[in-house]
Length: 147
Image 1 (tube, rainbow, N blue to C red):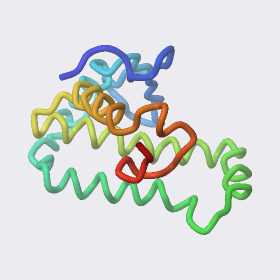
Image 2: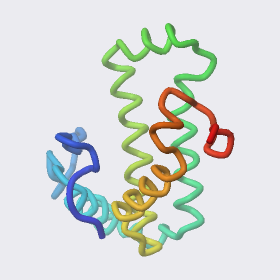
Image 3: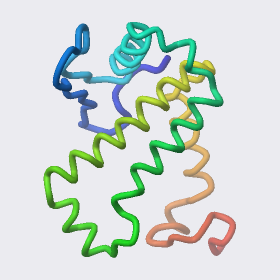
């Protein structure tokens, strides 16, 4: 699968060691290849590949994304800022984001898609759909942007 970094300039992907048994789990994963290897090793050590089919992984991604939404539901911008100012809440949001990322990596493996290449290609498509001169500061969908 993909190579390089997380796709963020000067950023690192980190997987914190959970409490308890984490045999073979690296404390830091610094690039996408290392993350993929860690996710797949975690899966394989538990004999979970048998459960990782595209349908169930897609369902799991949606469920985890919904869990990511939950702490923000019914909150306005100021309430969200206050919520995220608390370290425990930021950690919870980060855990939910990590769940989505781990499942995306698992699904990409299951269907044979290079996630980094897919993201690069999609960014290129979006750059054409949303040229800076027409979309800067504008939340309209590409087909509603003025020419």
